[in-house]
Length: 507
Image 1 (cartoon, rainbow, N blue to C red):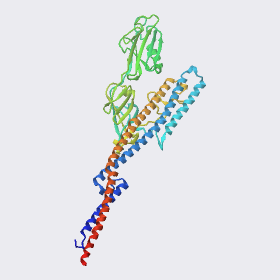
Image 2 (image 1 turned 90 degrees about the vertical axis):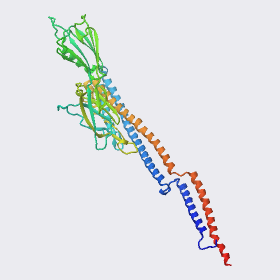
Image 3 (image 1 turned 120 degrees about the vertical axis):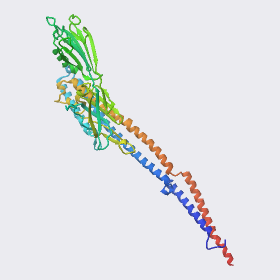
Image 4 (image 1 turned 180 degrees about the horizontal axis):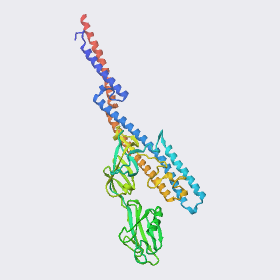
């Protein structure tokens, strides 16, 4: 080539140097950052996919942190409940000791009552003091709120249909409420037996008394009692004796005049509780040489005999789904709704005619966001009810505060059986709450954390495959680029030197 004004070979070499320098810079950048994609120009589609995955990974990491925090909060609440449970066991011990009246002096009973008062104060203190940061966990702050629990019958008569409402879990959008409809298809029933008094007067006419001296054994859900009556005892006296011991047996009675049509008076025995756990058993033990059939006719069977009847659990639906029924207690576990109800006897054990009551869950509960997607579907909630002495127990047997000094069931009133039932109801209340919290930890929080960790691993691997640099590839690219840069520089040097040869033509 004899032209010197334009050196095409030099231009080609310079272009190659620019390309090779760019490759060298890219290889150095990727090796220094560890990323294959450092800007949008490296891989636009890959950048979009990578940023989407990064967003998901960040959301999953936050959800894991939220679930871990929720697990810690629930653990703190459960720790407080564990102490409350231990105190309730001490209460059970003190009440059982006090019931041994002949074995304790009055000073010992007073000392037991002082200890009971101290335990009640400790329970109230734990209910207020158990907290995570500034959030108190056991004082009812995390209980669900309801509205319209008691409604009117179609006739307009106000009835308390629900004695207690415990919402365990429910998902409710902010500012919204959830309607709960409870329908009674068939009421729960008490156990029931009837007996006709077939005593006679001097003329042989039935007079509604016992024909002979008789001993009756009454058995119910709480225990049994033997009652002895003289010949000629009237129905009212028998009923009064049975009702005086109903707290010990779980059986009550009432008198009816000619209700069965074969005598002027009869006695109706019935359990004081409802449902399949309730029962009434009556044994007629005739004595003093009675002739069979001359004292008491127990549902058509005379003489020395035993009759037994068991209560019946009703049929109820909650929001159209069959409820779990145990006497006057109902539970629903359907989807994201879990609740426990105690019906009033007027509603749960009323007539068998269909009836409906309703109320609204308006909010509350401990709400945790444990999903990468923020929203109602990503939330889990659990109700943590108040565990103060005014709320432990239930409306059926009473509340724990009533066993304190000066209250209806303190030791001086000697209502030991009632006090024991209250404490046991409180123990069951706390145990149930601890069980629900433990289930929430194990089956919701821990499983969610484990699942999210696996999801984070998989998404991180996918994002790494798109965005991270392969050092083996980039090292090879670096070596190649270094060689090409060196080669192109040498070529440029030769290309720049080539026009020098044309000077020979000038002599």
